[in-house]
Structures are given as structure tokens and as C-alpha cells.
Image (cartoon, rainbow, N blue to C red):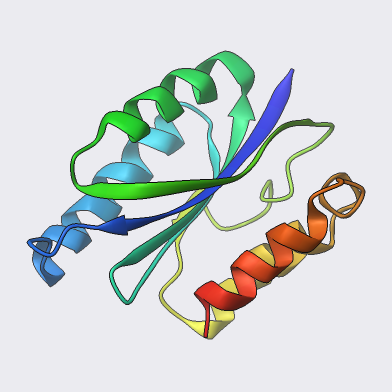
Amino acid sequence: MIKTICYTSIYTQNIHAFKLEMLFHETRLNNNSHKIKGVLVAKNNKFFQILEGPEAILDDLYTAIKKDTRHHEINEILNTPITSNSFKDFGTGYNTIKSIESLLGLQTYLSSPSINNLNNAALFLTTIQNFFK
């Protein structure tokens, strides 16, 4: 079974541009090696991350994410089974968003039936809109 996890968090002030790039690189390598799809966005000391992949792998990864001291105030938006990956054709698999053009996969995710049919879809969309302001 596959699932998706989506959350926002605030990253610590001591993560400067170089450390952020290294974090993006490590995240991409790790997630691609585990066949995890999704995106990681950093803006104004906030992370927005969407993960899709095998349930057991994501559950272990999310447990580690919640213990990671490089960020705090984790706000879980979604943690639910899905029937297919929204990001299956999104670049090499797991990406970091650095430009407007990269938002296409995010738009596909937001418009997918598995997301839109959730009871908390309005909360999810409001959170995303607030993040990108």
C-alpha cells in the first residue's frame, strides 16, 4: 500500500543557504533511493514537504523527520493512503521546488481525486495558500 504525508515546519535560524542546499541534496538522494516521490519547498524559514511512497518506509521516515532538530513546529496536513502517486512523472522522483515551473507537480497533487475527496481538503488548501503568500 502507498500513502502520502504532507506537512509544514519551521526550520532553525542557523540553516544558511549552503546548509539548505546540502539538506535538499541529501533529501533528494535518500528519497530517490527509497522510491519516495514528492517535493520539498523552503520559503521564509518554513518547509513544506509532500511525500508519497510505500507505507512502512514513509512511516519510518516521518518518525525520523519529527525527531530532526533542524526544524520544529511540525504541522501535519495529510497522512493518508492513496491509490496512485501524483508525482510519478515529476522529474527524477523526489524534487525540491526552486522555481515557478516546478510547481506543476504540486498542482497535479492538489487536483488529484484522492486529495480533493478528503474531509480536510479545505484546511489543506488554506495551509498551502498561506505558505506561498
